[in-house]
Image (cartoon, rainbow, N blue to C red):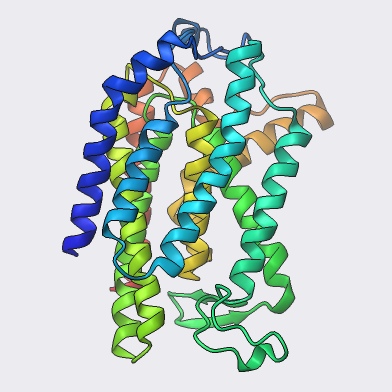
Length: 347
């Protein structure tokens, strides 16, 4: 627990200290946000606000994870690499936006190819048990399997074997999480605030998992889970520090550099815990963003009518006159309540 707290504090401190250095640099480089013309009119005032601020909290996240991951790097380091892999896709998207002044960035198929490739690698990594002590001639004889093809249902305390179906399932979870967080990043402090609460909850879940595995004599697996305690705590701390600059009125936006990275981090925490079915509950606000877009697009194509004033859902509330800060607060409260309910499965 002490290392978890220290990792979160270090991540937050590094992020807060870097903000006054990186934000002016982004301004000098003219890495400003390009607002969509069809977005809320109030957002036009945010035109030119520095973007690609995800670089700030990614540095804090890296510092907290590497400094305090004494053991358990079998999970923590891959989680960090996966986070950076998605961040790279986001960085390319942001770079095109700010340099070519094209608000949509990468083309849809380019994003899908990048995300699909990373998701496939991660799914295979998880399926083969974290690639530790794998007997490729007889996978049933492999030792120290960390993840595998089973998912855990915590409220019922049972495991569900997916077999080869685990690979497409994991890919769906990853791509879904990454794009859901990306869609949620539309208001000041929204994505970072909700992710912070989710990450704190996941750090407690990994703490429980590590203790249970240790008591069962599975020392190697327990150490791997302990690394994820640090990683999740570092994500929470980095988001906390980033809120210093990203809360309303935002001095910097995380951009796709940050939102895709957070999506990757959220997905990998869910998969590595094996309690992946808790993700749509704990991350219900992320799911709401994605589902609202799907419903809006589907309704317009089929009926030529819109369900919401604008999608994602938070923009619908915004156009109805709800204050931006109130929407963010309610999203964070809902996330906190749902995370507490899910934590009951481990209590």
